[in-house]
Amino acid sequence: MSINQNIKPISTKINERGNLEIGGCDITEIANKYSTPLYIMDEQTLRGIAREYKKAFSRLENVNMMFASKALMVSAIAKILSEEGFGFDVVSGGELYTVKNANVNMKNITFNGNNKTTDELNMALDYGVGRISVDNFLELALLNEIAKSKNITQKILLRITPGIECHTHEYIQTGHLDSKFGFDLTQIDEAIELISDEYKNLELTGLHAHIGSQIFETQVYYDEIGVILKEIKRIKDKFGIELYEINAGGGLGVTYTTDDCPPSVETVANVIIDSIEKHCEKYNLKKPVLYIEPGRSIVATAGVTLYTIGSSKQVPNGRKYIAVDGGMADNPRPSMYGAKYFAQIANYKEENIPEKVTVAGRFCESGDILIKDIELNNPQEGDLLCVFNTGAYGYSMSSNYNCVLKPAMVLVNSSQSDIIVERQTYEQLVQNDVIPDRI
Image 1 (cartoon, rainbow, N blue to C red):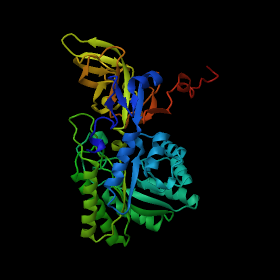
Image 2 (cartoon, rainbow, N blue to C red; image 1 turned 120 degrees about the horizontal axis):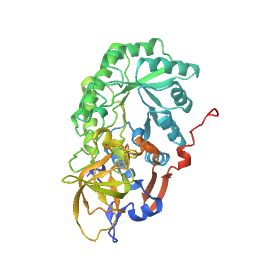
Image 3 (tube, rainbow, N blue to C red; image 1 turned 90 degrees about the vertical axis):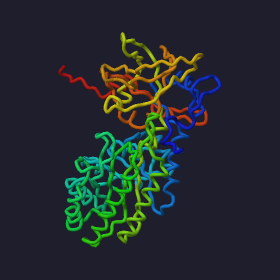
Image 4 (tube, helix red, strand yellow; image 1 turned 180 degrees about the vertical axis):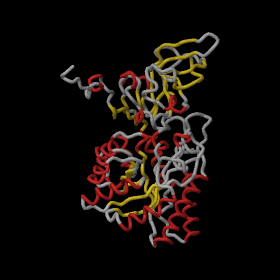
């Protein structure tokens, strides 16, 4: 079974004390040491899925693994993935700065995004990033101007919308035609003409497409590669230019609940490689350098969020709510687009007394519900609740709503735990607040 098909980190077990254990660490001891809410990342799972990806694509001669940093970008995670041979797809100056802080080779960076600022593009060129995925005509002109001012020729990809729609939530579909991302296929010729005739400080190396996120289908990957290579063939015939790089994005789904059935990493890799081989033969093209950008499927399963249960409420003839000490500020996905999760009580219970409850957060919104109608073992005040598969888009989308402090993050492995993100303090919460002298 591929790691993305697991709900829990691969090191998860119940120890001899009856407590949940991850990375050889007793979760009750972790809670006592670091408090809750708490993000926990299992290093064994993280390195395991990274190695799965490398192995799955190993029969391709030229392939580059690029972690989609928006899923989770902290320095320790960047360092681990860099050690595992990954580059990084970044989408902001903050992500650029973080990977630089982790001493990542900046030639292994692709800078992506639909509205990069002038400051961010300057930063990217000053850092020496390997590729910039250009999203639109304004960016083409701006990037060339900046590169010219620095006497740099910057390698770029053109991001395209391939017109492929996968069956995920509309907010995480990015490859269909009605999308804010990328050049429409009808705009590519104009972009290439501008690069060839006017933008002499840009070197076009290939095309970039991304079809969405939390994808369970495989045919969409086959079709995406076909669209990209067909376009490369057309460009070769019309302009005499054979682009030699393709970036197929990422998007492979993970198992949040038992209802989810994502394909394995190996299955998706085989589909992509088969499509490259067949379409290159069909169009008489050299096999391109392939870039793959998994994000969620790299970090989701490795991460859990630990909460302490507080108050409860039994609605007459209705649901029973249990409240935890976190919620939509540390994981906004359930309230944003109905994301579902699995959880269990982490501390020992003498008896197994299943009870259906709805897990509510502590924030002042009726929509602050983490999990609806889940069976937990006799949840009581003071119990620890472990929510699985939160490694992606929990911390990275977290906020200070209600002025609640952001949780710490801990890395566990071989019975050792280490802080990789300190818990925010009240002093840090207000450190950028300024009261003008006039008031």
